[in-house]
Image (tube, rainbow, N blue to C red; front, side, top):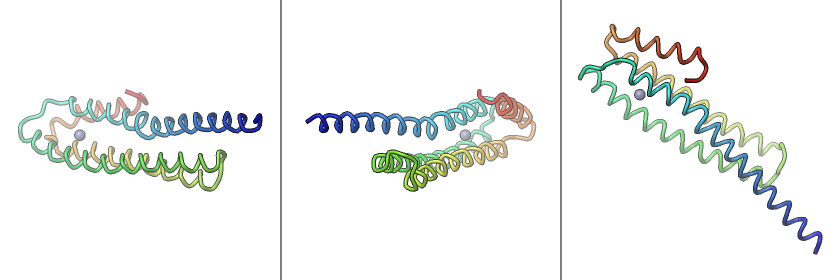
Length: 147
Ligand SMILES: [Zn+2]
């Protein structure tokens, strides 16, 4: 009886920790990095007044980027769920946890890379005289570390 209740407590604790880790994975994967990038992304969108042609070019690039981002975010959610499963199976550092963690890291890195590619394609869609204002916002934000 005592042994059984101890097991239940341990199971509950493990559940809480997995929840926290998944939350951490989601924070790392979905908030810290992308929100930083998204804030920057929003700032860049507002950095320069766009003419109609620039708006049309950027809207098309925007739709393509949103599709890529949605796909990567779906990978990230799957990776987070697999990390949770791996931790539930072995609640310590293990080859399974390591491998699941690498999937989370890979998806987060891909999201950052795609965002930066989009930042450059947005710049390429601007008229040359609008690019220096854009660059200023980009560089200042990156150098500050967090917008
Ligand atoms: Zn954009």
